[in-house]
Image 1: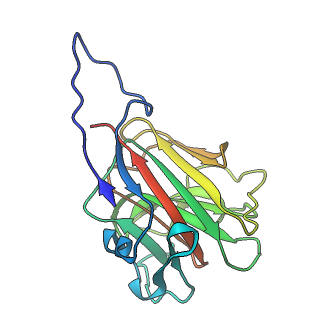
Image 2: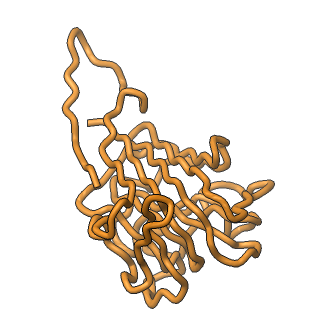
Length: 213
């Protein structure tokens, strides 16, 4: 995995950077089994690498991780990097059974198992699904009203994109280019980014992160 941090110089004054000008600081294509070494896992025993689709990282059911509060049991987080403002883009596939809460999750502002934010993308929205949640020393709390509709995972690859353009700012979530969820930023600080599920199965074959210097 490539992780690099660029230094931006301003001549004649600076303006607030946009994602188009931010450096690409993470570009993980999962081309080898060593890709797993770039992540920390809630339960490493259920994660594996495969050479399908040019390389991908997947997780199975049966996580033995027991979070301190009601929250996702499966996640892999990028090591040695924390982000506040960022754009994260992932190519992912849900490989579990089809039901209302069929999900994948995307983690941000991760500080500890009891303090982080995550996006839950699911087939059917309700008070516990398909929202942006905050875990802050308590069971997860939804940050937005219940959506009118969820998303369709099918059995294909999708592109999910999280955008938080200012430190501690609002978060927007795009599914195959369409804005599907957004929430204010209060309560979310700097932290790790990652991918996983509440208790389902899935794969990821590309992960990229852009961030300001």
